[in-house]
Length: 250
Image (cartoon, rainbow, N blue to C red; front, top):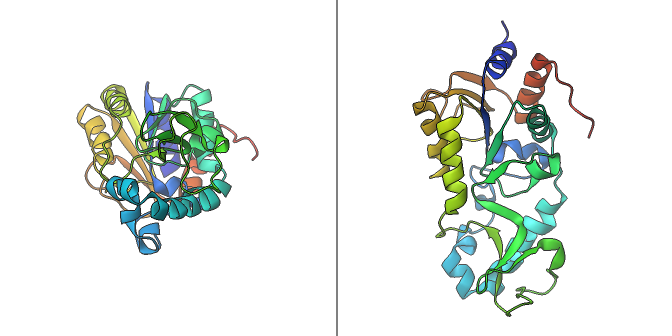
């Protein structure tokens, strides 16, 4: 039996499935990872996304934030791996996507139940009154942008260094780890805490683990039951083919 048929059998015989995704699923959409030799932190100073630095020097942080997350990331589109997860959700085979990504690509692909561990770059939040805006409502040519309601500083609604994970998202992710009998890990190396603690929690509660990654990760030997060494799109297309479920065209 091929590795994809094994994965398909695991999916077919599972009652509640959670997908857990990291930077690797969005690389093929043109979004580079933050870590590694070609990661964004090899080109930009991560201090620019420290919450205390941002609040003290927004005029220095915001131009870089705009360049990375809006001028560059804004052009990215969902790829076949994102679309596959949306189709599996529509077919009732995946109940939830927990993502460490902030790029909104799961939602653009059609996934409805998405828990964003680190927030979403497509929204800005006021650091004073917590007013929330879609990025399309804000003129990013004016640096730094300010809240129309109270005049407070706007920041992207994702987790900066020095900020806590949103408690609601964390609690829902823990709940999925406790309830799911299968986790599909895609493009995540297990290096970022506390997100990296969710799959091991699922494993400890009896879930099986399918892992799709280009290279072995911190999960591979520790918790993964089936390791598919492949790019995210290749791995998910292989799984969909084995399930006999067609992907819609882009």
